[in-house]
Length: 289
Image (cartoon, rainbow, N blue to C red):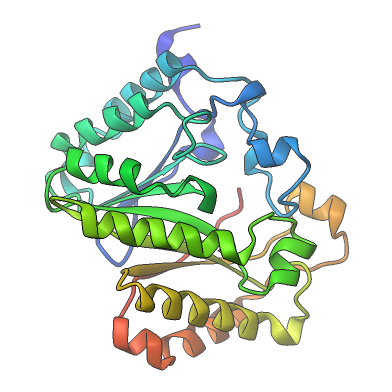
């Protein structure tokens, strides 16, 4: 195999550039460095709605992910000068040093010199890896205009849905501790900015069809309130539920979220007083894994 073939992500994870709240946006997917290349929560049989945690079928190393970074820099070289928002995934938590080495994250920060219009670096993670010192280190490594935004996969503020039906193992107390860590990092950063992205699942398992929009609205309202209490900027990623392989096995009769429920959710969220006061970014992820 040629090096570029080894370094390239699977075709399904080579995302096209899209426009969002900030401008041109692209997602880069790295390999998981945890045992077997699998998300630890997936290995434990949790997070029943997602297939992403299965990884790429092999355990990555730091050199392998550095090759992946070089591949992205070459593959997207014509897009980098106009890029405003870079999203980094790895089939798990990129802020967990067991899943993506800190050296690779710092390498990514260093490569932003080739992205003069970059405004946001979003990092997919979980609440337990939201660490004040680590976030501060990253934002201080970046150009001043770049905001670091960890992505919290909350899905639902309803404990029974999130930790009962989906088994995220993400208790509310741990979420609040994670939000405190992000807010502390934002205060501590000597330059740049730190905020939060949060994923909201629309019409997921455990949510009746006539409650799909309302659960998303309740989740958005809870996030807006919690971030408002901490003076923490928030962007919302709305993800309509679709039956993944694991979702079909666990919830075979639960339907894909309809476009009508997505539209209803968006209308109700942007009408919230908390939304109008803070004006967060809003992104709709209408793409299967």
